[in-house]
Each structure stands twice: as C-alpha cells, then as structure tokens.
Length: 320
Image 1 (spheres, rainbow, N blue to C red):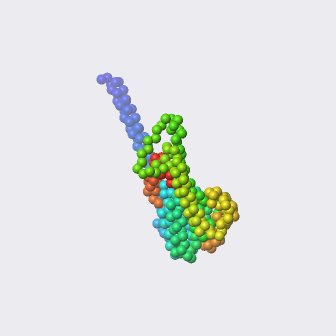
Image 2: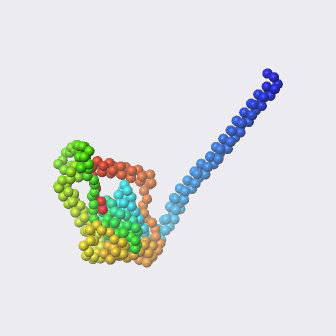
Image 3: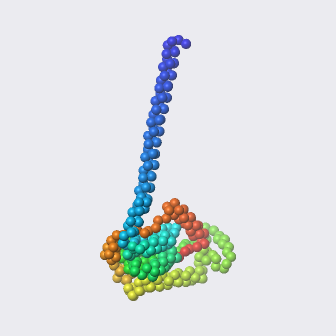
C-alpha cells in the first residue's frame, strides 16, 4: 500500500473514531439530562406526597381537634357507592364528628341531586340516632348548589337547613325509568325470546310489551317509597312545612322559595353557621376519604355490574 493511501486510510479511520466518540459523548450527555429530569420528577412526586400527608403526620389536624370547634362533613355527588356518595363513608365521618369531645356542633354540607333510596335512608337514620345519643350537639345541614331528592331526604333530619340564594332544593319524589323497543323490533323483524322461571320474573323487560299488571305493580312500589319519603320529611321538618299541594309533587325550588315553603330555614354558608349560629368559628373537617385506588376499583366494579344488569333488563332500581 502506498504511503498516500495509508495516510488516507488512517485519516478516514481517525475521522470515524472521532465521530463515534462524539456521538457517544452526546448520547451520554442526553442520557444524563434525562436521568436528571426523571430524578427531579421523582423528587417532585415524593415531595407532593409528603406535602399531602404532612398535616396528619405532624399532628396538625389533631391539634385542631384538641380545641373547641365546629365539625364539618361533606356529602357531595350522587348518593350511590358507584357514583359519588357512599353511605358508609358519610356515616363514618358523622360518627367521628359527634364522638369528638371538642365538637360543639356538626355541619353536614350537602351538594347532591339524590340517588339511592336505601343509601339515603342509611345516612338519615344514622343522623337521627346520633342526635338522640348526643343531645347537646346540634346538626345543621348547609346546602351549596343542590339538595334534591335523596339529598333532601338526608337533609330533612337536620336541626336546621341553611341555603344559598341560588341553591336548588326539593324534588321530593321517586322515579323508575327505562325504554321500550317493541315497535322497533317489530319493524326490524326481531323476535324476542325470553324464558323465565317465575310468572313475573320478566316484569318491565324493555323488549316486551308493558302489561297493565307490570305498570300497576311498579306504580304501587313507587307510591310506597314516595309515602316513606314524605313521612321522613314531615318527621324532620314538622310544623315548619307549608300546606302547599306542590310540596311533595317532585318539583324543586330556589333557596328563598324553599324557605317560604318550610323546606329550609335561613340563608347561610358553613362559615356563617359556625361563626354566627354555633359561635365557634374554628371548623375541623371530618369528611372521610377512601383510598383512591380502592375507591376507583370498587366504583368501576359496581358501575360495570349495574350497567350490565340495566342493559340486560334484570333490574331498574328506583331513584330519589
């Protein structure tokens, strides 16, 4: 090989090695930068977790509880374990609030359009029980945006109900809804093959005509639930209720209208009640929080089961 070719070859190899070395250095720098980024991200995540749990870990909440205070429990969302408000969670918060020796009064702050009659009843009955057990601790309901149907079922157990001028209250009624597809099936030439064991097991099947028996039986059930709802409201509100015929018709009203009808007592927020009514401005939140992952899994499972049953025509739960 001539000297000139050897020099060219050595130069080419040298350039290649330099290029490889440069690329390797760039890749190392890039990896280092990404490494620093992910480390910072990890530290930020850990810092956020520490920040979220720090009040409890330092005992700040316990320090607040050690002083006289107004207890607060939030009830926000549809009253159903799968959709928002779990009765067990609300009840646990109420029990903790009443049992605390420094609680002067309990505020149940409600923002709910209603939901399950059973879940609403669980909470209402527990409020009645706790009020009897702790006679010196009043419970006040404070309505934010909406307190309708099952939400009002719960609120009616309070000693007094406070609302905002723009709050919506009422809807004292029960509903059960669904769809019927019989005409569409006839037009499409679809045959429904429903087999049951039990004469009325297929009652209210959306793919079969609704018989008079089906309609009458469902209506009787709704009327019974409605009567129970009315009784609970009358027991809770007593003589404060007006004699309006529309009171239990399922209609809803604004905060001031609800006061006129006796469904609520006064305009006021949680802060107002704690400061002006209870006389103890310090508010301690006793609202119970589920583990986020467990809550998500429970709700997904319950929602999936409920949706499957609804689609299959197995159940149509009444709702408040």
